[in-house]
Amino acid sequence: MTVSTPITTPFGAESTAAEVVDGIDLTGRRAIVTGGASGIGVETARALAGAGAEVTLAVRNAEAGERTAADITETTGNKRLLVARLDLADQASVAAFAAQWDGPLHILVNNAGIMASPLMRTPEGWEMQFATNHLGHFALATRLHGALAAAGRARVVSVSSSAHLRSPVVFEDIGFLERPYEPWAAYGQSKTANVLFAVEATRRWAGDGVTVNALMPGGIRTGLQRYVTDEELDRLRRQSGGDGASWKTPEQGAATSVLVATSPLLDGVGGRYFEDCNEAGLNQPGSRRGVAAYALDADSAALLWQVSADMLAA
Ligand SMILES: NC(=O)c1ccc[n+]([C@@H]2O[C@H](COP(=O)([O-])OP(=O)(O)OC[C@H]3O[C@@H](n4cnc5c(N)ncnc54)[C@H](OP(=O)(O)O)[C@@H]3O)[C@@H](O)[C@H]2O)c1
Image (cartoon, rainbow, N blue to C red; front, side, top):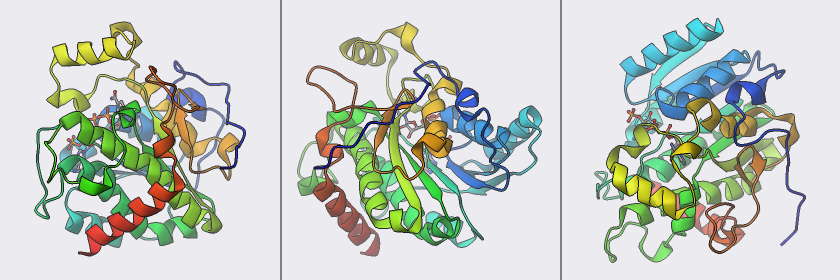
């Protein structure tokens, strides 16, 4: 394994998306933010639009998307906000979204996600968190690869989570067909897949100028916690050494995504995992910070790509 110097930046846990993009001109750049109508997706889109990019909000709920687009236009003065329907759990929807995309794509933020849901399956029988958080974004990015390559130097942002520390991708039973379903294990598996995607996509696509990095945004109160009770949330945060005071605002939660999408400090950099606006080190036992070695493993990343492509082709 080659050891590379970790990327450090002047930003940290409290930095906001507006601060990390300050001074960066995205005029002429085109970006997509999945799940851009709620939570940190809104603030990610707002920061990119504020820097001059054309931003497409790729959303399930077009009305919420239109409201968010109008709000972003009002706060940034940028009128190049577009809304397009995308349901990541529906492969026909992903295909339709990608088919109507025309021209280059400079920034793809794979942000949408669900967390710790009860067992749900897509019509194909795929477990819903893996299908939404990983497979939908895998299909989207691979379908948009031509547009990304056409941009020259494009970036894909893979929004993961420290919850990836809860589970590797269990290749023997990704779909929880043989083992009991556990909502956090399923979420963790899908978030590890988000990191492995960054590793293998960079290996495959860096030659086209496309780099992919993963990140943990921090803990932010959003719609993501809809399946989790307040008591369970408190218990989990105490376990991980956090407390109520350490929640980030959505503007702070969007900062690492925006940094990974735009910072010149990441030019040519891919396949890495960021946290609090800096590259994270390897996770240490007993800590909820850093990246698991299994999430950066090149062989697992290559295997996940193949397995994902096979699932989509079946
Ligand atoms: N908040 C945190 O503390 C935290 C911590 C670590 C990682 N993250 C990650 O950050 C990302 C953003 O989360 P958030 O906190 O901003 O949560 P959020 O407010 O719930 O946003 C998630 C977005 O994903 C969309 N989405 C869900 N399923 C979808 C599907 N099948 N197709 C298309 N879009 C879908 C949701 O759309 P609807 O509105 O239609 O449901 C929503 O807009 C997620 O990937 C999450 O795993 C968040």
